Length: 165
Image (tube, rainbow, N blue to C red; front, side):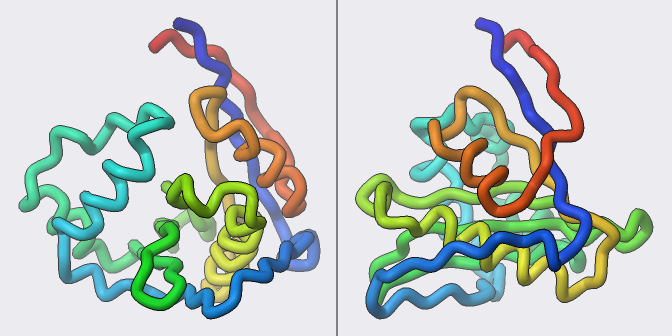
């Protein structure tokens, strides 16, 4: 199967077009990364419908090693005690860029503008590190609104490629 992959970036925090979300009680907070099982669960459950496979074979030890990276930030979104989604990014200090590595929400929150708001939060969090740019990649296996969401928040496509999966 051929998949289109898109690489997008944003080069200034003033280019951000924020999205609001009217979900009462929504809290987005940095996760302390101490529970690899929890992070693995979020990755598996949210990514199942979108063919997230690169970490499926990771052991809990591998998850722990990844989560212990000093340049990794992991955030969860919740409403009360109900987890709604997450995002993570890597701050590449040497390149002065932030890579948004994963972001997703649970199906029951689709259509509630949570994706746009979560991306807004992720971009604002990334700008705290004063990078020259924040970038992400997505593909046609991702949620149908993913690419539109990135563009709607002010990100621009800088590379496209077709890959066989």
